[in-house]
Image 1 (cartoon, helix red, strand yellow):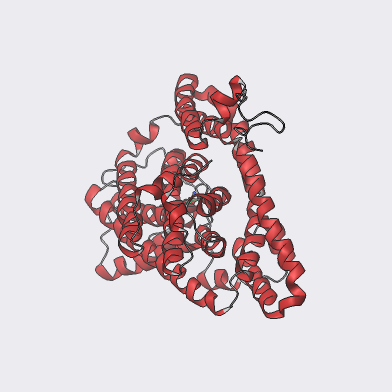
Image 2 (cartoon, rainbow, N blue to C red):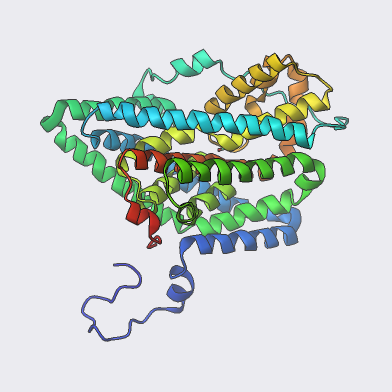
Amino acid sequence: MTLNETPPGAPDHAPVRRSFLQRWWFDVVLWKRILLALVLGAVVGLALGEAAASLKWLGDLFIRLIRMVVVPLVFLSITSGMAAMGDPRRLGSIGGKVLGFYFATTLIAVILGLVLGHLFQPGVGVDFTGVEARPVGEAPSVSEQLLGIVPLNPVEALANGDILAVIFFAILLGAAILAVGEKAEPVKKVFDGGVEMILFITRVVMEVAPFGVFALVAWVMGTQGFAVFTHVFLLALALVVGCVLQVLLVHGGLLRLVARLPVLPFFRDISDAILVAFSTSSSAATLPVAMRVAEKNLGVSHTVASTALPIGTTISMDGTALYIGLLTMFTVQAFGVELTPVQFLIAGLTITLVAIGTAPVPSASLFMLSAVLGSVGLSAEQTALVVGFVLPFDRLLDMTRTVANSTSDLAVAVTVAKMENELDEEAYRAKPVE
Ligand code: ASP
């Protein structure tokens, strides 16, 4: 029974009594509650200053709760989504489009990052005196990452939360269910039921979101406040402008021009996911919410949502790609290095690959920077200085780019669903019910 339904046995005409709490809390749609928490968190954080750090545990608790569902959700939903395709060849058609769009939007983000870095000149005149260098170690090589997709032991991959390896095994399992047919039917039912259960848990966990978001935003504002704007102002400004352009023009454009759908329902329906991405800075933590809004609000079929979104979370990071592009420009400007056109090309390609390999967790992109800067001849010491300079102010920047990471996954999922006749357009246009 939902909170607004008439209790069983009550006469039809009896007015439904709802408690004060129900009216003032549960009857308000979730995104409004989260938004209110975000604003209150910012105010309380600014008022408390450093003392706001004592609230962080509540935010961490929320992130743990939501990350708890990520691995089982990816495993169960990809397997059941594959099994629901009915024909393994559809994987090729859906998968090809999904990967193509992910790659294209990432490439645009990289170019946008480099161009905005050139226009805003965020690194000119930066002074590194007093900055503590933060060595970041070598990023894993592309061949290592590719080999790692095949798990030596699927159970180990699940236990370690190695998402790409889990995706690989789940695709095989789903294809096997299709190939075996009737005998595998009971297994298919277990996976289908499992997905529903995990999405139910996600919904329950999301009731904690307003409290978690309040605590996370209070902590960020209290401990970092507007320092980001005074210390790395141009970098922050360029990132915000870039992410807004990427989300509105590229993701909105994809929906409008390729999927031929109105854009407003998209942004209205995904507000829960946007707010969670912003406050947690983790697209992995946002995945369960993204899957829920895709299926329940946007009308994307289970088959497309369950394949496109987990893959997108892991490999498609537009905000991150844009940010690494900006940081590359920041670094060459700070050290007065001139890049040749060929070096720009190399940097652009390396950033695209690095963005694909970045883990969907807070501040992950900073630690991938060495691969990009190394490819254009900057030293490990120079990278360490840049990371040491930016890291203390990274959280607000991370919150911004994670939003663009998540909207790209959702826009691509809707577009591919539309192209594959897997979108319930009526549900897409309708206001979400919860
Ligand atoms: N925090 C980002 C994400 O989870 C990754 C990054 O750019 O650091 O999507």
